[in-house]
Image (cartoon, rainbow, N blue to C red; front, side, top):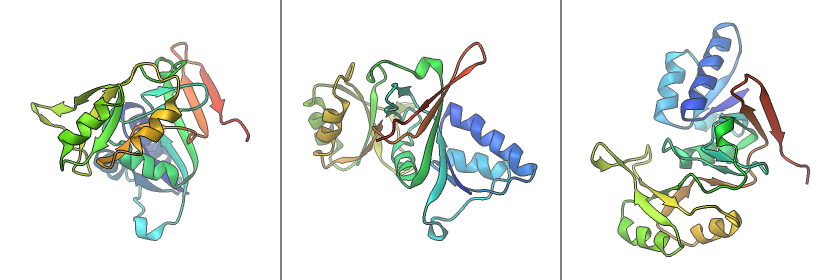
Length: 207
């Protein structure tokens, strides 16, 4: 199988478990969604699949910053949202693993990460603000946060999203946006880990 490796605190543990299975004989090739995940995979001996050698990804395993019961997601707290969406869209199955604090009734308490091109980012910032959110340019150690793609990230506090599909359409009209962390209708399965050790499995409803 070709397996997508997500990014973030939950994906970290999934990658470590896959590394353990590889050492036991599991035969997979991996497609990481970030430099961080790639370094971890290589450290654990998980073979990396060059993009030129694959057409599809069998399974993508990732985490989420928020997920609702319709399996809509906000992702990008770790800054890898664009690569995560590219890999998810090329996968036959998109599996999300998250703890119960990430399961919400409606998306929006977690600010929506939006990856923007550095060129004229100030204009993009103002266009985002016109959508009714409170945008904040992400910083790291008193510098602009730079994604693995060389872009900036603006975290947009929309508040509770009663119509996330409308926000999705609005974001698509801003040319300075490279990608965003709103993943609607993309996840196939969400596994919620609970404090009591039990899990809850949410699956995409049949069309």
